[in-house]
Image (tube, rainbow, N blue to C red; front, side, top):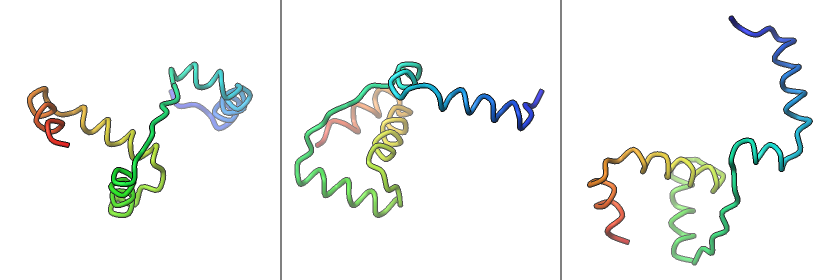
Length: 82
């Protein structure tokens, strides 16, 4: 059964009350620190421009999810070359 607007709003308020740390823990999120060199940064910038994806985090998340759809042999071949 679909939720009413009041129920959705109540749930949103409850979510908004969670501290950022609690929210991230609930989502099993963690911070990935990565040093990026100029050549890699240039590649990221090109991909952002071509795809229209503005946020690096969003771009990397989408790339990882799409790459993970490859079967084992395709994945090995895809990552065999730098």
